[in-house]
Length: 199
Ligand SMILES: *[C@@H]1O[C@H](CO)[C@@H](O)[C@H](O)[C@H]1NC(C)=O
Image (tube, rainbow, N blue to C red):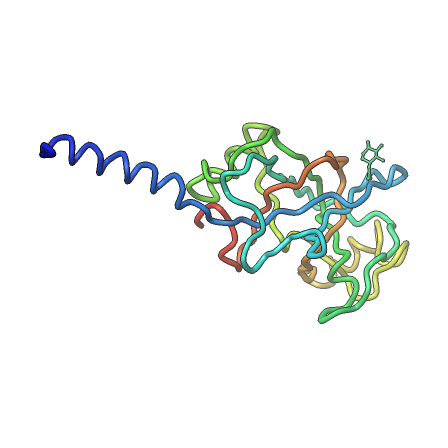
């Protein structure tokens, strides 16, 4: 004989276990590729060869990883050389510029965030006002940019004559910063279901 109470209690335990395991949801993570000391910039990429998957996710949301955060302050692009190649989009798309800074938080299970606003708040707590979650499409580019071409003052002038509508890139980008290279990071992506948080 099983009493109603113990039956209900076992059901509750069962659901708790179920809920904590069911979050086998997978989020997208990215990694740092390199740093250029002379320009104080990092290259960060969604490296599909190393597992990054923006379409179905690559890392269990319960995994503790740093969040990649950004602060954009309209910094013009420093004169880095194009290291990217043409694919579906021109190479500049894949070698875009964040127009600011990146930094990484302490490690956190992404499943603890309910919405993107919570992740943004975590970035702000870590680094101060103006810091929010880095997003897959943060980078901006100018067709034909390379080295000094459309760098610094030329970057700003091009923007001024184009309503400051720099096309948005994706997959990898350059940014001011020098983040750690010993781990992957959680990153936001605004047009795929592979974030551990809602929007
Ligand atoms: C990782 O960063 C450290 C410290 O900046 C550097 O010495 C090392 O060469 C980097 N490793 C790789 C694989 O880039």
